[in-house]
Image 1: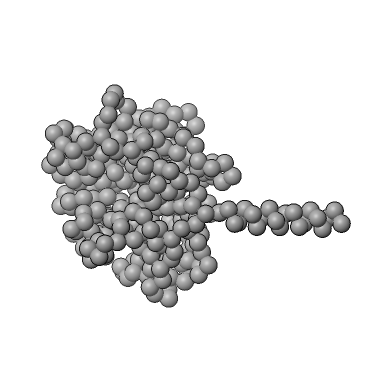
Image 2: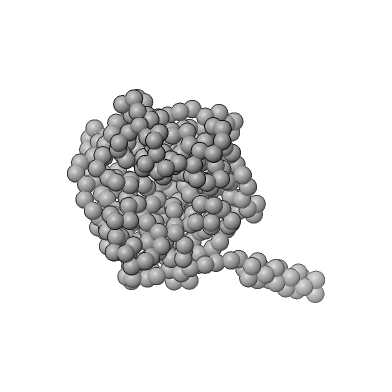
Length: 333
């Protein structure tokens, strides 16, 4: 009898936990092929909420937890299963006095090949690196040709150790009209293992998220300009620079239709499928640029990252930290 009662109690507790799990949005299936990537019963779970603008999720394999930025709050948070979210690092992107701007903190985050936290810092206008065990930041890059960056936004590391990052004006007090701007460009840059910074793309109006294809022969760059809301694809050359880019997918019509959000952060699965934020949530594209569907969050969506065993997609969307289980595996797992 005790065994039966215990079993019944466990079932009741499990049902209560399931009932309490909050969800939002839906998966909009536009092509049958999406069923190979996301199960028909998959839900978008709310893991944590109440942030000003959640961004830059990065999974820490060694600690089995997620780090993400709240850019206006100048804070990096840690989320761990069973423990929830807590402040991890503050200040995260601006160490000065007084109010810098409405987005002073870190934005894009990655865990590099050495297991350290690499941050795109708006307020301090640099790319920094920090050990997760003891802290203490170093600057990887803060200028090009003697001119300070605007506000580094997102970053990716190539397998050879090179970093590629974007530099739009979103972290500046007056954005593109800020008097402290030193460069006329909103560039995409490469920081080589020798420490040298190279400008590799100079003709985008609002470069934002970026990612490599699994074979690293293509660099994808999202542009968050509402009038030119593109996902671009560039061939990666032998010297680490890129060739002439092409528009892989144009979300501008979706923006004009009134869907919330712009191309921002993106991640790639091992088969080359692209999970990119954009109008309506997360757009799921084939490597050829065919739209398979959309993870619709109902709010402007900033970024995403693979976690756990590589099949869980964590999503930062406005005030929310979300996740959805997939049937694929992300690059890096």
